[in-house]
Length: 212
Image (cartoon, rainbow, N blue to C red; front, side):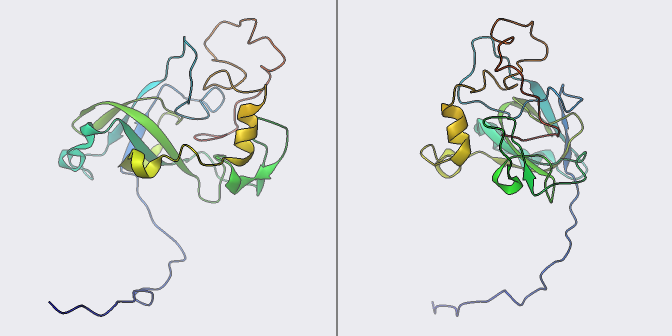
């Protein structure tokens, strides 16, 4: 069979100046306000009494048939790509809630206020019913629009030895987070001696979705 000549698609269409996307589903989570919503859906380590949020992703059956989720139940984790619809502005720099009080470049953080308010979250799949995915661990507010989902694949999605810049420094500092709710502690947990320490004065992020 003869080898086909190389193709060049650069001129096939004009570069788009605007994009149009439509939600394929919605997040149903217990979080209804920005403050107190977790900064990340997952933690490397968790306290003994940690209880991740139970939520679900309801895909719109008129857009996504149940057959589109075939074989997804064989994966433990899921990437959720969402539109952080409450965020309508952004700044070039932000001050992350963890670590030194230093402003960082917004695109070097997971701040929810971004040029395009897209959220990316890895969450654990509990089970799937039709076009509803029940998940464990969520950092999205209730009614967050979902743009897409993809299975988490460890060999290409995980880089355990990768550097993480100032995040590594925050992890090594004494002000490391106690749990997913940050140094302020779980909003529904009774204050403890640890919660009352000077390290428990961080505010939750002013936004919805991911943060560092």
